[in-house]
Picture (cartoon, rainbow, N blue to C red):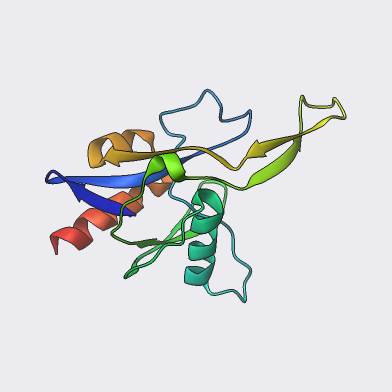
Length: 144
């Protein structure tokens, strides 16, 4: 999701929850995303994952930003949509994880623990390196 606020282009990024990501900031943020099965429609999956990670149902015109293979081998397909949201009203789904490791105790963590609007420069610093291409493609799209 992106918006223009006082002539500044801003993008909406999410920060992964859980103990591994708790103290990471630069290079840790992401676009809202999730995996889809081979027979699933990627856009339908993207909309569902956005809702699961924010509690919002994304609506509007979705513009494809293409696919990009991540360093771990996962292929991410992304879309852009112009919109806005009140960060104080967002809520993520949760996941269970054995924590501390090898303790035998399970703990629940939010899949996403923070949401933020970033200027394009700030987003380039914070987004996962494998997803920077989507910011570049959004800039080309909006300039074009």
